[in-house]
Structure formats: C-alpha cells, structure tokens
Image (cartoon, rainbow, N blue to C red; front, side, top):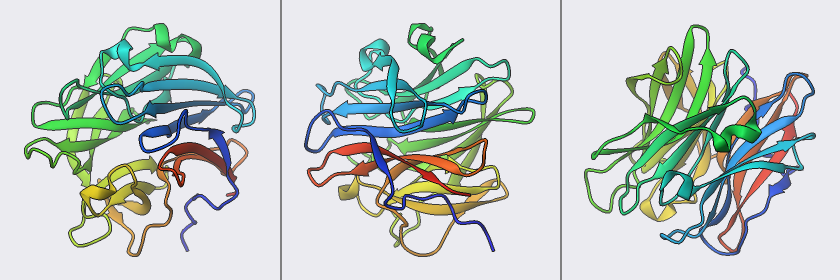
Length: 288
C-alpha cells in the first residue's frame, strides 16, 4: 500500500495573514527548506494586495525556529524586477551551501510571465543579489510557479506554462519538465502533467510538490471562473510524466508545498482561502 500524501488535516495554524480583506489580498504560494544544522526553517512566499496594476506584490523570505512563527529577513518588491505582479518562488540550496531563489514575475501590460534567479551566501542577502533570467518564456508562452530541485548529476524543474495564443484564454495551464547541469542553463523535456477534458482539472494542472518517491501534489480547476481558487489533487510519477489519481480533489488548498523533516515526517505550507475572498498562508506538521 502506498504511503498517504501529506495533506492539510484541519490541525494547521496561520503563518501569515493577508494584508487586507477581499479577493486578491493573498499571502501564500510558499516554498520551504528545513536547515540541517538546527532544524529551523527558511520560507519564501508571495504577498499580493489586489488583482490590478496597483497590486503591491512582493516575494518575502522569512526564518522560523518552529516552522510556524515567521520572521521576515528579506523582501523583494515587484518594482525590483519592473514587474506587474509576482507569484510562487522556489528556494533551493546549492551543493556549496549557497541559497538560490527563483522568482516569477509578470510582464507589465501583458499576460506574459518569466522566471529569474538570485543567489547569495545567506537568505538575508538574496534581496541584494543580481537577478538573472533563467526561464524567459516568449510571445506564445508564459512561464511561472517553478518547483526546482537538486538531483544527482544536476538540477530539475517543473514549470507551470500558460499559452498566450488565444486572447482572454491565457488562464489555461499545464506543467512541463526541464533539467540543468548548473540550475542556470536549462533544457526543456516537454509537458508532463496536463488538464483532463471533462474532469475537475479540465482547465489546468500545475505541479506544486514532487516528493523523492514520485508522489506529487498539483493544483487544478475546471473553469476560467475558478481562477485563483484552484484545489489540490494528487498524482504519481510514471516515467517522465505524471498520472493524476482518479476521484475528486483532496483539499481546497492551493500551492501546497511539502518540506521533508530530518527527524521524519513533513511540514507542509499552503495557501488557504478565507470567506471574504482573501487567502492566508497556513502550515502544519504531518507525521510520516
């Protein structure tokens, strides 16, 4: 019998509340790493304050001794990248122990997104680092919400892709895979998780967490109207691709991230909707 995937259970706590009420006021889309030496956590997440050009979006890096109480150590405002908005970052340690933050940014006056990387000795210094574009997208494709992992012999990433070929239909999405020797120059290997016509994920399928044993979580939705209110589904890796589990979504959370713990088990972070339309960042401990 396969292990149960670490999912929200109702025992979570609020790690970051939204700055305001109503749709578009969101704290979430997290990525987290547990430190090897002391068991503390470094968490990066996105904040937004609306859905229009005035949205004061930013990527925040925080430290936490217990994984629940977060202390901000760096903030990367969207103006740092001359971007219209920001979404899910990816936080990774290099082989030498340095820190990399992959941030996704929205192009002004467009539905296009791109992904930059910044690198520093410590999380506190990432905001001072130079940004380098690693996934540029193009006129026909927006790229965002990366999962980036170090693996034997290099790096791998899963990228959420939005086609830009049909006006007012750019919310459609799927997940593609890429590999790299250094985490900077990438080779694409095609789509690995796609929407399923007629199902609850017919409009999109975005990987949010991939475990070492091939189990995965993804965000999906059926319609354009469900944009920003995706739900969590489960998938498993079969060769280079992922196969969705049958059945309904397993959570109303989105952007579920899973941090394996050195003592076993997991700490999960995710974006959870509130009754007023805002979203908050929540976390909980899940036993192995």
